[in-house]
Image 1 (spheres, rainbow, N blue to C red):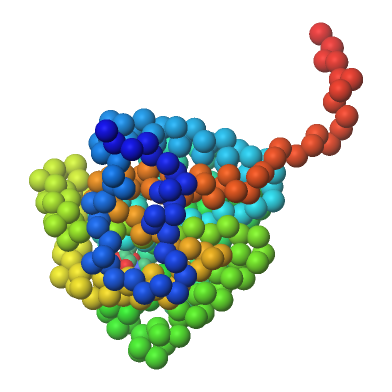
Image 2 (cartoon, rainbow, N blue to C red; image 1 turned 30 degrees about the vertical axis):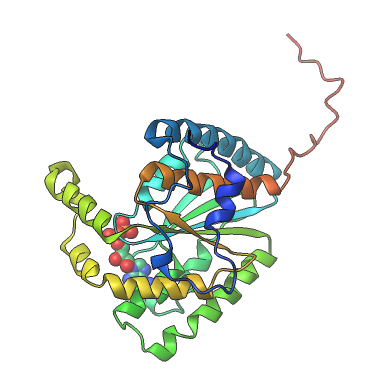
Amino acid sequence: MSPKLDPYRIEKRYRVEPGSEIHLSDWDPSDTAGFDGGKEEGRRYLSGLNQQLESLQELLYAENKHKVLIVLQGMDTSGKDGVIRHVFEGVNPQGVRVASFKVPTPLELAHDYLWRVHQQTPGKGEMVIFNRSHYEDVLVVRVHSLVPEEVWSRRYDQINAFERLLAEEGTIILKFFLHISKEEQKARLQARLDDETKHWKFSLGDLKERALWPEYQKAYEDVLSKTSSEYAPWYIVPSDRKWFRNLVVGSALVERLKELQMSYPAPKDDLSQVVIED
Ligand code: ADP
């Protein structure tokens, strides 16, 4: 019998302890924490999490106090878009926003790399999902040597300081690395090739990035080892099974939001004697 899925235990299992040295070979991308209910049961759990998230997000919006930032990173096909679609299903679009970070524009490049990122951070009551993020500036930028090592190597400390600032000013930050195996990526890319309706998602550039797999894994290991903090933890999300990937992200988020012990604000007026006339 598969164990009951316990969001609290899931959250702990995949959270990166600050200061720990991460070797991704120790983290199984197809792990399911002993939970072998499979897709069907996984979906049932996810729909429970969706409902909890919907209520928590409504509270967040109503209370208008906390700000929530969710960072999604991972290799191509790891499922960043899938997480956004499935984990946030049913959440009121008012109060939730997705910010996607692409190759920087000339204007963005004329500024420091955090400039475009800071502008997209959440305001009070808001939840923002980063589809890629400032971490690209120590991932793709490092792997392709877009800036010299002395420049990118300073960025881990800068990023920690930036995230600390956000946290001290009231932002709850959760960062998810969607960890897939190279074999699973091959299968997903092949599925895109085999299906004409998925060709729009395929770019030859993805194959060039795939060829740099070891370099990216190393760059991710450094990110995870150097930038997981109490105020902005990383989670290594086993992502070879999509249903489990969604459960991990959903569980971590719901657990964190519950800790905030939010409540609906009191009404501005005394409503106890209000009668609505016919
Ligand atoms: P996605 O793969 O996220 O669905 P795209 O296919 O448009 O969307 O890819 C966005 C590309 O932008 C990625 O290859 C990513 O590495 C790149 N990118 C993001 N941020 C930066 C950055 N700061 N410097 C260089 N490239 C970046």
